[in-house]
Image 1: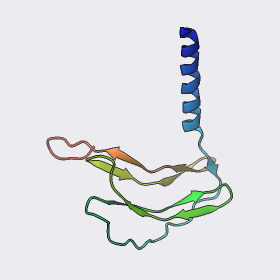
Image 2: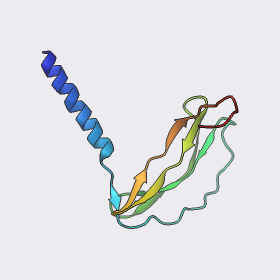
Image 3: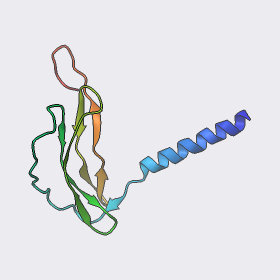
Image 4: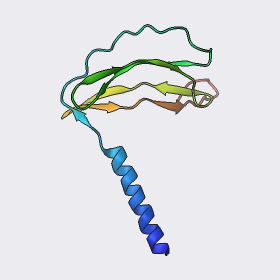
Length: 108
């Protein structure tokens, strides 16, 4: 019984790792960023999430920016972006990052 659970955990971990490690490489460079007009924020707590070009398997599609509330205090948005690698371009998903402050109030 313990062995079955252990095998299950190893298998689940391998699946999770392979899903994260599977980068999609696009050989065509992404288009230039679209200059968006943003309306007023819904509240002073909202942060602008800039739009980005997404690859749909055949071409780039623009995903519009939006206002969003941070999920926790002192969270900073790291924007979606494309990274050039040897074989082409790889998309890096945007995400919220926790910001820590030192005694000198510098971000890390």
